Image 1 (cartoon, rainbow over the protein chains, first blue to last red):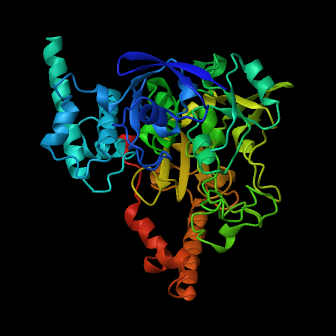
Image 2 (image 1 turned 90 degrees about the horizontal axis):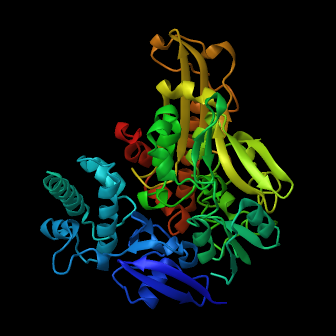
Image 3 (image 1 turned 120 degrees about the vertical axis):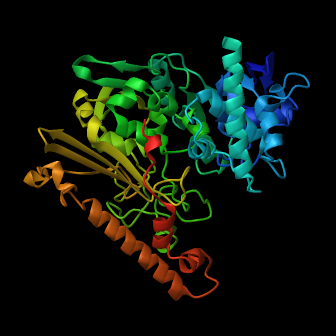
Length: 165
Length: 354
């Protein structure tokens, strides 16, 4: 069985022939498209290492069948920076030491981008922690992660204000 | 994961017809189904993808202030819908207390109703489980079961239904719309899930090939909006299933409780609606507390919690008796579970309520 799907990945449209309907979006990104920035942690939707934005919303790519998401827009960690200029969330993770080993970091960053877009957390650290609870960090860098998300959010809001003015 | 055929019908009628083929299951977001398939817990021969069916992704008002929620509506879209969360805050609160943000962006209303139980023995192919294999036995009964059912269980299964959403829906008299080859039918949410009895493999009243297309909330449910809450006790602050939860709703009229609703989660294989009984509930709210027997049905809230605490104490005692090296109960022995509930759980923070 061959199934053809079209995805827009980091702004580029790709038509992909799937040999097997079992392929998840995560495996497609990593094994077929060499986009290995998105990590496979638990592979069961519990750790959040595989978080990507699907049509602008953060999801666990390990639980999404590629074949079921034909036509979707996918943003991965590779598509976040503009050339050499880091995304404000990436920059804030460096400033606040929001990682140690780095394995969960792409998922944390994509989740943070999704959280800021959702706009439900405000500037309350407790709400940010709740909003990021789908991303586990075994090194325990949660404090830096929370500070990074809050600062990135402040910076993005400020940039938005300046652009609107 | 087993190999499967994949079909993507264009209409509800086509989907229902496609699902009539034996071995077929519906795929919506797949957040539970794909997980189960990866673990080899279920092995469907054919997935009927209903994730793009037209007409099922709307939240639409009906006459008489009733609200119809399409089965494809995602948790986050429903919980953050300003009109919805204002009219049915308990439901929105329950939705936001469940899963993670990633899952809430994906998982659907219909899928929530049909998610499987979260018993560790069900998820472990090496354990005996009557749900996976009828007649195999139930390892949970003699195992680590302090999170299992205290109401409505049977000798064949003691698992609980994991949904928060359904608990709030049960309290508010929601109705499930079901489409099958014989046409459309409706079932009260309270009657949708089945207690295990002798057939734990049957978890709902859905017949093979039937599809949940919508959930409806009656307009009258909105009268509880001002005095309603969803309380969830769990072992960590976020992203955990309920140890026990409760949707409590009061309709206060002229300073008197005109009607009280209470449904409990984490205690049975279905959301447990405690039927409010008689005049005991009609007490002025100034008394500052809920009537003791406002949930006068099978085990009101307080007695359920009491029973669960006793249950946990027994579990801890079992661990102590088992002696060192008995892996399953080591954790219970090291730290009495009731203590962990008291220290690590708390009321749902106010900001979580939309």
